[in-house]
Length: 115
Image (cartoon, rainbow, N blue to C red; front, side):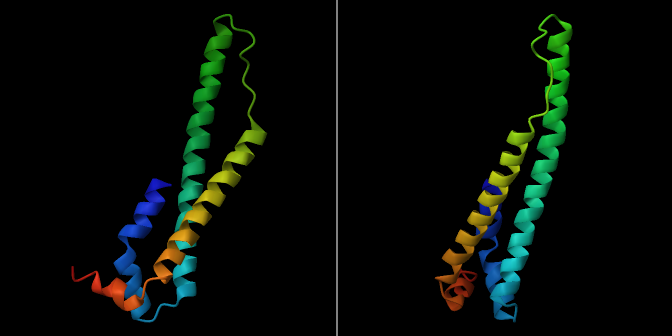
C-alpha cells in the first residue's frame, strides 16, 4: 500500500499535466484504479504462490520429522478475506488520494512543477 500511495503522490504533477491537456477526471480515475488493481493482482499472485509453496514445504518437512499434526490444508477462507481486504484498501487509498487532489486547483498543482 505504501507503493500505491507513493505512486500517486509522486505523480501529482504528471496527473495535473494530463488533466490540463484534456484528460478527463473520469479517465484519470479509471487509469489510477486500473493501476491499483493491477498492483493488487500482482501482489496476490506473488504472495499466494510463494507463500503457499513455502507453507506446504514447511508443513511437509515438519510432518516428516514426526509432527503429525502439521498436515497442510490450504486456507480458503483466509485467502478470500485477504484478497477482499487488499482490494478494498487499494480502492480506498486510490479514491481518497484522488479526492484530496481534486480539492486543490489544477493551476496550483501545475505551479508546483516550477518549484
